[in-house]
Amino acid sequence: MEWLIPVIVVVVLVAIIGIYLWATYNSLVTLKVRVDEAWSDITVQLKRRADLIPNLIESVKGYAAHEKGVFEAVTAARAETLQAQGPVDASAAETHMQTALKSIFAVAEAYPQLQASQNFLQLQAELVDTEDKVQASRRFYNGGVRELNTKIRVFPNNIFAKRLGFTERDFFEVADLAAIAEPPRVQF
Image 1: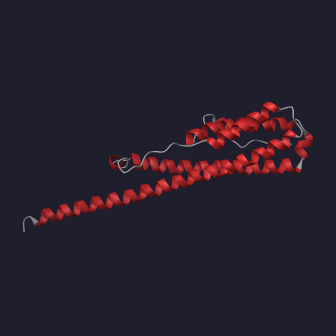
Image 2: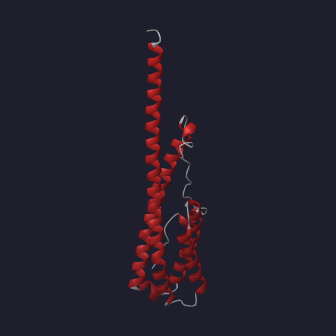
Image 3: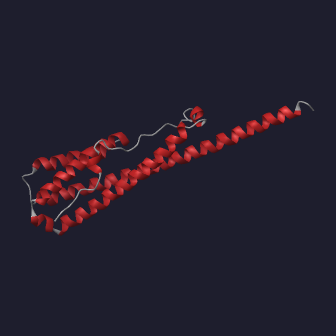
């Protein structure tokens, strides 16, 4: 009978540790899936914006065909956005895209007929809407990454999280924060 109490204590401790590991593993899986979903949302919005760019270029080209350098910069930024493979690449591409979009809108400001074009106005509205969605998706993604990274780093999770295949994720940050502080401004 004396051996029964230590056995019960050991069984209870093992059960508590098992339940803790089970609950922690499941919460890490949930956070990982949430971050993956948020990244997918970002890629969808970046693709949507990239699909708008050729139409925008064609609209502006009809009025400002001599602005070849601007169109090439926007096209290069679009290609970079589509080729980005993760948050770090997407961050660099985002900075280049914002700079290129600002330059195309600067060109458009010099052409009143272009600014009055229904097609151009619609494209601008869609682009601004998409930029808002990119920002919202980015905030959601970064919040999920913050939760996942915190859960992985805290003790005692840090002891076994990496052994279970959970790694910290990169935030979707942009090197030039001023470039994305607001969507491209359009003035008429």
